[in-house]
Length: 280
Length: 300
Image (cartoon, each protein chain N blue to C red):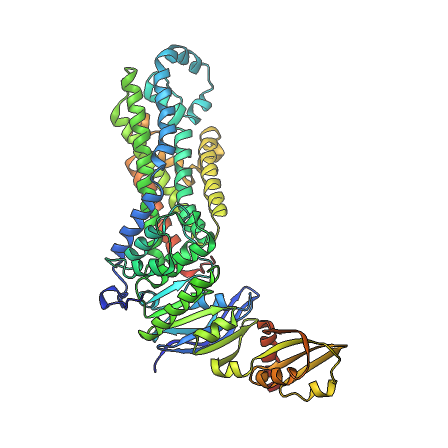
């Protein structure tokens, strides 16, 4: 049986608007990442909820213990005061573990969707449709921003539920500020990974570059707090702009700088991606 | 007829490594054009450069009269492509893949997907990661054809397909030609190219060594003949047969090459003797390339 294609089924002779392609890319990307909020946000939220639930039983001994810590160490890890549940949650989760994990998730999203997809040959089919490479990159960046937000919403809800169930007076506004701060930080590293994917053809080097930068910036910030000679270099670390939003509130300028820098890095990555070969 | 694909000294190098060198060819509207060459000859590099996945080191390619780099989006709106190794995110089903690609093309319907699915007996509802190579290839062909593009660029389209599906693919290519589409396909398979194509380009070591009408190519073809007689045969009799070359005789056994056009006369001549065994074999593509090489060096 053969059916001659009619004019209505034939490919249009002009490329469709980029907005339509972007919508399709984001929808597809979110579908690919639909388990991420539970897989990533679930355990992170459960850990945060556990930390919050644990706080009443150890708060007294904590205060005593913290008094004995060296001042530099307390500064470095933001443990100036563990007299509130927010301060304890910040020290246990929001100063190290949660921002590193969520930023790594963002790097992983970008590495898999651009360099990983190229490595496995998936883009050979997508990039022969009338979709500009910059639209593909914008779609991946937007998908990552939404997926990171979804992971943080799940983590935040579980944390708030943990506080509510154990009767802790966790300031909801501060929790939202902290989650927003982590989102901005993750977006900055998503931008870095996009820049790397603009040059590198394989997922592992992109992941390695992004994770290396993440670890390096964290160390620079911590060492900068401990050692005066390095302190002047802290401006080079994204963690300097992230601050301690759970205890000190969101630094609006730092947040905007991280998001803007992430978007600019992604735009630079898209420009490089346009210029290079897709090796497949 | 106007040119749908036109390359002018198209060159792609990977650092110091060779890709393709000075490839100049023209594919006309409505033509089925075969692109032949051994692995690593530069077929896929040429195709990827036409599709703007690779950027040429020098030279130029024009599709529909548009520049392959500057006007890439407008070009890609009008073509369908099957890559050499069709791959997609393994959890996605064929239906999801086609729907996604239709959305990227700004199409509201899945076009000819149902018809093609039926003809290829394809399974659109299983994740592609669970499909055999042949069944994945069917999904690849459907996504290349569903929107009825003006130009089809197919890299080894029958790889992994069983003979029945290869036959169906051949019918579809004939129908595409009928409706005025242009088909550019790369292949290892000389028989397939001969059957489907109007013209053929042969590439080796990154250089285009011949562009031929299929009829001309066919005239140049020959067969390897191995024959075992019941009794020894006079060598001079075999040597005198029309179109025979490279004759080797070992007792009752003879091996030689014969031009395809002379096959009938040779078989009739051999039949005058009692034959114990007879084998006819196609020359390998490599041997045909060597023939072209020899011709090219001779011309040089």
